[in-house]
Image 1 (tube, rainbow, N blue to C red):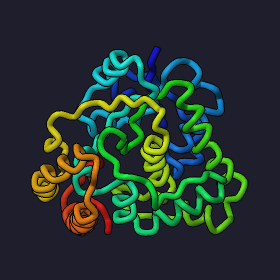
Image 2: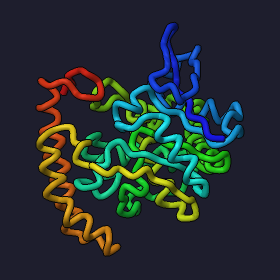
Image 3: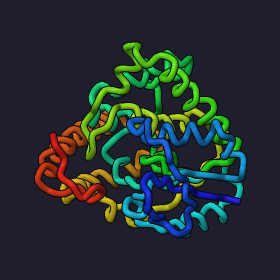
Length: 285
């Protein structure tokens, strides 16, 4: 059985997706951790052992343009997978080499903070060596459903050690660095953006994990601005060809980095005066 839970934080709050199950959140004392706290607590209670499970934010439908029932049907049909993902930002793959390029450009200092956190937790990943990532492994917003074994490997092996370190050593320079604020549609620390990227990193570094990625047919419909649409349209032929060939030219990756930087500058100015479609609010620079 596969179940997706939706966190409910407030009295009277109702599910945004009727196919999801409510996950009541009586204690919101770690709100700054965002999904990280929810995932770790769910794991520590052993709730992940009751079949394949995921925890999706109420913005799932808004971001993915897919209903909860559609995604659950996809999970049921792809029975041989260990993890099922849907990426609400399929456009990013065309102007970013991997999650760390996009993350570092949008949240300067993120990669150094993430590497320091991994090193402090004894997780031996070198983020500078993360390979090219396509939509086969990209999963922004933590929209994933995993088997109990996958939860053990990812949440138990990566997120829980991180949580334990932050709980035990909140005053260390590393902990303070990852809890520092960064630019986003809403005020948030680096931590949730680091963890969001650790997920796709885990998939890239664990080739034995069987991944079912929900197919997004009309990628241009996910562009948030006209400028992003133009970027994707122009980059798509070259990027798709490089991904099919399995050899991504250095020059193409450098071009992605430049365009990602340009788009960030544009987005800051654009959403300072135009409401962001995912929040309904303008963004303070």
